[in-house]
Amino acid sequence: MSDAWNKTYHWRQKGCDRWAKEWFKSQLEGLKVEDSGDVITFTELSECDGDVTLGSRKGKLITIYDLKIVAKWEGTAKDGSTASGKVHVPEVSHEAIDGLSDYVFEITGSPESSPLVSTAKRVLPPRLTEIFNAFPKALVADQGKEFNASPSASGASTPATPAAAPTPGGVATKAADAAKGAAPKAEDLERKVAAAASASSSSSNTSKVTVEGQFMASADDLWELLTDEKKVPMWSRAPAQIKPEPGSQFTLFGGGVKGEIVEAQRSKKLVQKWALSGGNWPEGHYATLTSTFEQGADSTTLRLTLEGVPKGQEDEIQRNLDMYYIRQLKQFGLGTIL
Image 1 (cartoon, rainbow, N blue to C red):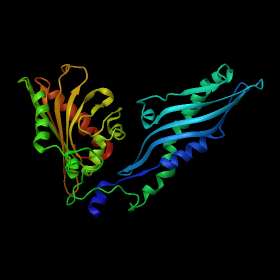
Image 2 (tube, one colour):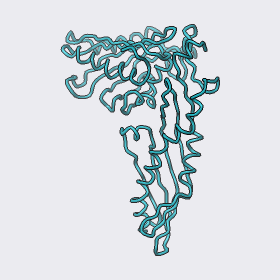
Image 3 (spheres, rainbow, N blue to C red):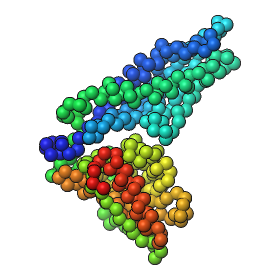
Image 4 (cartoon, rainbow, N blue to C red):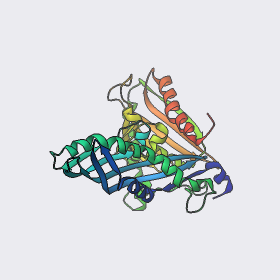
C-alpha cells in the first residue's frame, strides 16, 4: 500500500472474538452475588458466540460487537436450600451502549419453586449490566494498544488501490454469478432495474434528487459501512437490517427507511427500492435510490440519486439525504469536506 493511501485512510480493524470470550469468562466464572443471606455464584460461561471487532479511524477507536451470552449459576439460600439454573442474554451489543436497545435477560432455574430463582431474576440483571457496560472500555484498553503503532500487514485493513478496483466477494452480484457461469443475462438485470425505477416514477407527480459527498475512505470501506448491518449503526446511530443481496429487504434508521435491494455491485453500485415510513411519504410508494462509488487516488465520491420523489417533497428529501447519509458519514470521521 502506498504512503499516500496509508496517510489518508488510517483505517484498521481486528477481530477480537477469542479475547472477548476469555474476558467474559474471567468476569463471570466464580462471580458471587449476595442478597440478604442468599448467595448466587456463576459457575460456567457456557456460550459466548458472535462477532467482536475493534476498528481505528483517524485515531478514534470504535467497538462493534454482537454476542450471545449463556452462563450457569448455582445458589445457596440462607436456610441452606439450593437451586441452579442458567442466564441467557440473546444480544450483548454495542447498540445497548448507544441507547438503541436494551439487554434482555432470560433466567431459569430448578426447582422452579425455589425462592432462589426469584432472587436470581431480581439481582443478576443489574450485576450483569454493569459487566456488559464495562466490556467496550476493557476492549479498547487491552486490544487498542497496537493501534498506536504503524499499521502492519497483519493488522491493517488495506484499501484497494485505484489501479486494482475491488472485486465482488461474498455477495450475490451479477458479476459474481457471471464468474460462475450462472449469471442472468445483462439485459434481464437491466430490465429489472428499469422496472423498479419505472414503478417508482410512473407518475408525472414524481421527480429526482441527487446528493454527493467526498470521503477519505476506500470504496470498499465505504461500501461496508453502508451495507453491513453491524457497521451501519456506527454512523447512523440507529438499528439496521440489511444484506447486499438482490431481493432482500432492508430497514435503516430504526425502521424510518425501508425497502428492497435491487442490484448490488460491491464497492461500485447499489440500487434499492426505497421508502420512508410515515410522515408525508405516500403509503405504499417506493422510489429508487442508486448509490455509486467513484474511487480516486486519495478519496471516494459517493453519489446518491433518488428517483420517484413525490412532487413538493424534493427540497425536504434532498436535505434529509444530505443530513442523514452524507453528513453523518462525515461526522463519523470519513472526511472534513462538507
